[in-house]
Image (tube, rainbow, N blue to C red; front, side, top):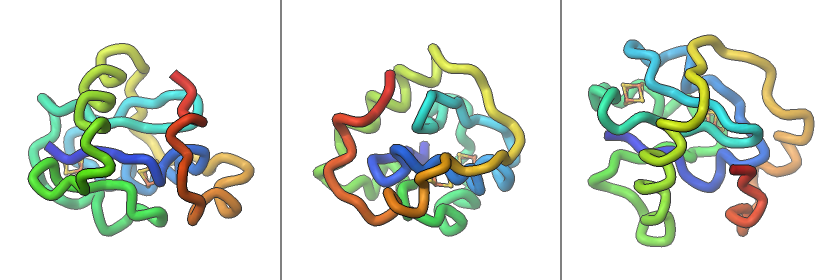
Amino acid sequence: AYVVTEPCIKCKYTDCVEVCPVNCFYEGANFLVIHPDECIDCGACEPVCPTKAIFPESDLPPEYSEYRTLNAQFATQWPNIAEKKAALPDADSFKDKKGKRSMLEA
Ligand code: SF4
Ligand code: F3S
């Protein structure tokens, strides 16, 4: 499965949602996740994310290893999102910021 990681936090551009053929994205207040059992590994979402937040599980950077579990967990708790919407208001200013993990709103 593909995994959404830290760069998405506080941005949520949702370009990924628009291209996913199986609608397997789930939406929190300031982050999206992919349901690992629903993702068909098509790879369509990875190149369209403006923050480069999406990785295949097999190529997950070590510093983002925790996000495998976070995606699986939140995908069962958050509502599905099937349509693109406006990014968060401060998305552009948070796009290149590091260290956003503590800002993730569960
Ligand atoms: Fe959806 Fe494909 Fe991305 Fe998986 S890899 S989340 S199926 S767009
Ligand atoms: Fe997040 Fe990138 Fe999608 S910022 S909402 S993973 S397009």
